[in-house]
Length: 91
Length: 176
Ligand SMILES: [Zn+2]
Image (cartoon, rainbow over all chains, first blue to last red; front, side):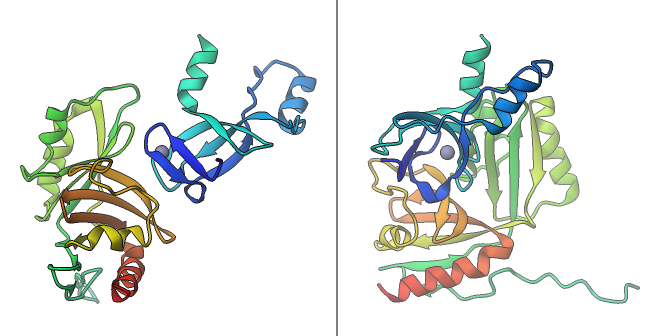
């Protein structure tokens, strides 16, 4: 359930310890053009189902995380450190 | 002569609450608190961290990936602090937080249940053994918890929140 988040550094913690930033969308390159930047800043899919979001463990380890959850059931099926996720997408 | 004499006052000028057979809450000496932050990508060895401690058990406490607190009962002079901060060289930054955070000990057979009234962390010994640490909340106050004994915990709290934490612990203690 999304009320209990399994932080990879801290273990299971209540959602009150976290701050949610929103959809984990990939930042475009600086020269990607106006359309790509407009989409990055303003356009969101609002999916019904699997969804990746940035959560900050504000009252714990203070790391940025990517929480993968299902918006229909609130089931979380993955919590990863955002730096590790960024490293994967770069390589 | 300065116009005003600087007076050092403890953040928690309180006598211990409760007794050790059940639950006891005690303000610990305001010695030193060092915040250690590893330089990007550097691995800090346990030996390096131990070299910053005062030799007592649980002096070094994990806080987050690449971050630790090093605590002790003795105040550090600026010369001692600079000497310690230089020990890790370019591997880590060491920030003196002795003025910024204070420690509270919670001990006794009921210590775990007193903490459970304000924390969502699982403090059962199989999960949170002696030496385990957690950055978390007590009610709405950010704290760093270390289990220092089977029935003993230390809470590290920002100085300006120490009085509120003390009151929360005292109120919950009264319900025991
Ligand atoms: Zn965490």
